[in-house]
Length: 205
Image (cartoon, rainbow, N blue to C red):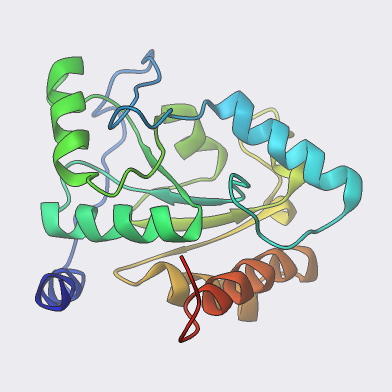
């Protein structure tokens, strides 16, 4: 396992080509990968944002997807596998723009191959636009206000913070914690604290 993580970490240091606009189909269904894990819909995610908004920023909890990892099937498989593992451990959701090779079957097979950890996945091109994602991987921490879409189809910039690059989920959260405006920084800080508490020696999983 340690060797596998070292190999994945080494691959994360490689350059990844950004997703090119227009590469994928626009109308795509939600997929489940792998069974029996249920892939959450965008509506589910935004509903969670709205519920979090009512009570203010809250500590990260299982199922609270204010952490989104944007990826592409063009990325190296070891990188996707490692990010899926981290997504599962941190409660993040993985999002791709569209079908792999224009095929639903190929997409399901590709997702199953790299998602042995069982992290939730979404196919949603509009989410790429909402958070202005132009490169992968991109890590986004969003607040409840992210569900509000402007005339250009984008979420208000004050409602989320994003960082792109070959890094771990923990490093991405720490970067956002240090750079984002207070509300988003607090969301990142809460989730980061929960991750570190979970990984403390002697902690049961």
